[in-house]
Length: 364
Image (cartoon, rainbow, N blue to C red):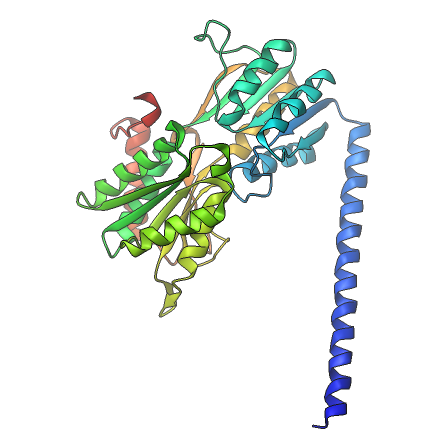
């Protein structure tokens, strides 16, 4: 082929790509404008105003915050509410955002993550007539014992769901070594780790679990580079299945297992997702996900406020209420045998019945 002809073909291809890109941008803009128009129409007929303040990981972390976002978006679609959201760039931006909603007399203010607990404690004290909800936090009255009446504390029994994915991990492991990558080194994440280890050892008493944490500050939730580094270190020590409970940092572990590729169509190393269904993040490399139905919990509290049935205090979600679970779908159904699933379901029923007691690290 002549040089001139090749140049002409390249110019045509580049032109086609440019046109395609322009069309995609226009489609995105049109979709965004359409969504905003629909939201404006809803706001004209809304009955309550709901504000949500995310953790610093942001609503698109494909994990904890994303699950909460899914819940309020579903509420916005199904119910006559006005939804407003704030993604703080840093921890110092959380309190001003929460107070801004309160000063505008919002009907419900949702805080995502235990780290917002001390902030919500102060703001809820200052605005006793405003209703609040916090995910993974517990807010008390000034006596430090009585659950605060204007705050719904949405808590989950993560150790129960973690026990089940621990069973799956140990059943799948060929090396007898598992990994756990936690975000911030705090009791809440110890709950995941302890449940995971107990579930794994119920299958293989001699299994080894390597645990590491990204850090001790809020930034530990948003450092995927460090998450990958820790996961690769664990793999280097023999871990072939890694459970991550680290928010956005955990996505680094997904990259780490993918790096080890596949043999005969199956991954050589696996990761277990957390909070939301992450099976599709790296299809084939994600053994399962330990789901916290944050979306349902948030949706329900919005519905309660709208219907006048809001109740402050503890709202606990465990296996008995499908508040935690393990995810099965087309992405991972070929990775876990029916025999393993049968044993896991048997254990689930025993946990619900109280026949298996999973240690709650936060109750120690």
